[in-house]
Length: 437
Image (cartoon, rainbow, N blue to C red; front, side, top):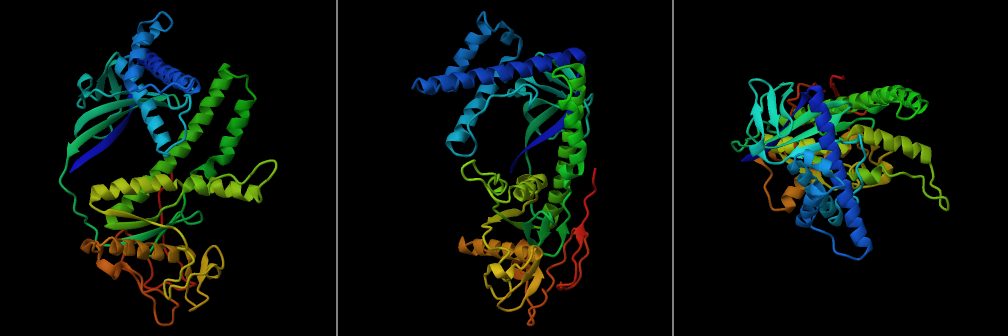
């Protein structure tokens, strides 16, 4: 199979190379904003939107024109790639996958991409890379680049420059080493609860740094804008944001790697995070209710990184030969896994599930994970596919004892976590610890 993978490193440019990279990123931002403004003007006049070829002709005029001759100092391929990015943004908008394209702002996601691998030279032995109009640039070589280079993206974050090298290589069709299937219920109190009884304690990266971030932002607001002290205060705010993001990514990568290596099939809910985290403020005519409580919930949801967790699980399971099954989230925490009774009264509290029909009781998140796994198996049967043999068939599903008070143990997790042989209402399950930054 063909695998696309990106390898990201921190660059160690000279002072002149840093100035050049800032100019190149500024040129790409200018071309994107000017092309977007032109498309808006054409739409207001009732004219047809220009395609990529038409924008490239205008780019040639801009580079050779008297108004913007400095565009010729930047490499042409990154500028053309910027126009492709705008074309893709319009396509995503018309396909209702994203919002309407917005103008780019200086200092936010400054980057440029070299799409032609023939112009790029990678010298891993000496930890350097050759980029057009920049020359050889050194980078922190933390791991080997595997495969053939397809394109290179240079980006800035918190005053530091990074290079992302996308490669392509042929690998053998992976065969999953694990033999279990698992369902995952996402939450705020518990980040992820697995149907085998283990759960991941949330990192809450933003919440841990919220007070420090607030003080840094207040200090920046008291400085004269664009002064040297303001720039120093802004750098401190950016550093805190970078630490929050790095800690969250580290947590998600460790969790998804552990799950993908120890389970051949993972079932997860199709959560609409954007709708779940929508503000409840309402309008002036129709103000919302419980706005403050909903705001705290929205912040907690976004702090978990649910969508990134699902995205990482998707490609890591594919690399390991596993499968990710997405199921509808309706009533997963209200359905009794013992008798199938669905009622809102079954979920008495946030953490307690007690079936009003048969009396089965368990942790609500664990019940949701079991139902998610059951729905994933049902989807496979409805599609006419056999349950993968590597997943242990239906043995991965939970079974309930005759008294309805406990769940028989699933196949033991290979993640190195311990759990009891049975789960009772008063028995806790183990939490998978993730090292914190």
